[in-house]
Amino acid sequence: MANWKYTLDFKKFYNDPNTSIKEKAIKACNIIESTFPDPDSDLEDVWYSFESAIDTEDFNSAMEQLYDWADQEIPPRGQWPPNKKCWVKTF
Image (cartoon, rainbow, N blue to C red; front, side, top):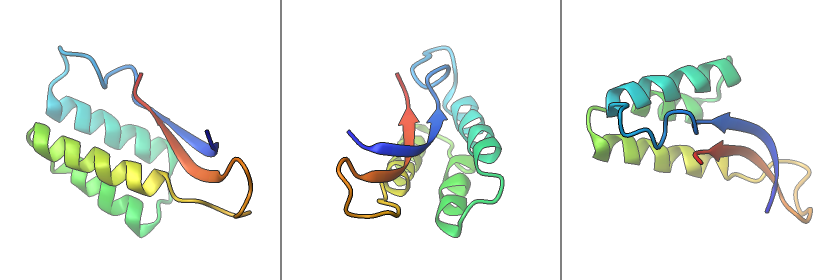
């Protein structure tokens, strides 16, 4: 496990079969915006991927981008457990 600096909590909608992909993408954008009001350019790219998601493939691609962004090690580096940027809670 890691020491996570932030958490994005998607569990309320992520596994809900009654929530459309577009609704999930909008909710993801809202949570990202509220957690990171001044995002770096990489997270902005992730946000735009969610905003433009129109199907499951697009949404899953945006989630992969988010996981890659969130899993970056942050200072102080070389710690155990490692310091990571953000936990994405989906369950």
